[in-house]
Length: 116
Length: 116
Image (cartoon, rainbow over all chains, first blue to last red; front, side):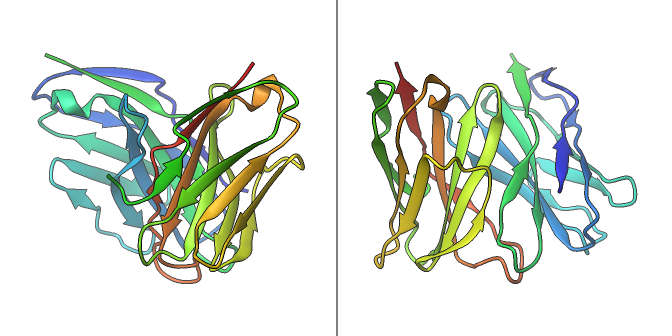
């Protein structure tokens, strides 16, 4: 079974600064996908970024980028130029590739607060 | 609007009762997933359907059941409700069945169930 661990329950950052959220996972699979989802106060789950494990290049989406270290089983999210609207709970998630379906295994979440 | 529609948004009921949560996936999506988000257990995968058939099962209680209909909408039935069933229930949908490629899930806004 896969597990996802987010060791930072809460973080805060000043507007316009950069923050990094940590995530580690445990799996014996070689093919898988990793995701970051955000959940703002509205409770909607919104995809931030995804990474295919077979790709060495780190994924980027505008101000969001990841540092994917496959050997270390680490998948951190960097948010640059933080904005007030980035305040949300951030979940790291793992998805196994294959015939057993596409369930996402989520970490416990990190509550990020962006301060003005 | 994510394109995934969940009803009702809020539901308050008593212990021992039965409720049905409904989900309409995004147009073109064949897979539907149900997740439960509670304070003590985080986000837990319940069940996945693909084109009307059960595809994967997670930590779904025997008191809970789900199905996906020919028009691809899905219903999650929760019976003999207990206080601990109070949670936010998310439906998500995706195009694929998980056999290949990164299967990106789009989440609905959730149905908040309160059991008194």
